[in-house]
Image 1 (cartoon, rainbow, N blue to C red):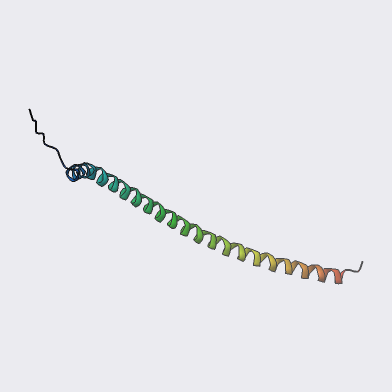
Image 2 (image 1 turned 45 degrees about the vertical axis):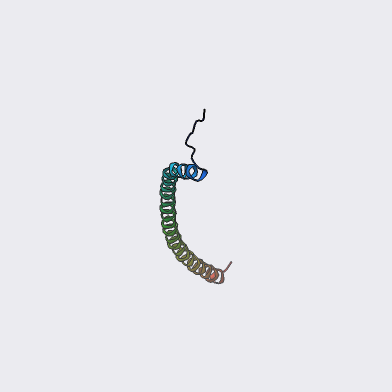
Length: 91
């Protein structure tokens, strides 16, 4: 007695496996795209925060420079007064 069975070829079984895996690949690709978009948004937010911080630091630096100039001017005035006082003193 001879029994014939239908045997799928290797290429047919590979195609079937690829078809089964394709939705999984598509899902993973979409997940990775979402993750990439989220990472890009995070980077953008960090860049904006960094720019804001830099602007605040520049402003603070300018204020400190102005205060330093005022202090130097006051120091020079005080030194001048001390020198005049020392020359006027008849000790």
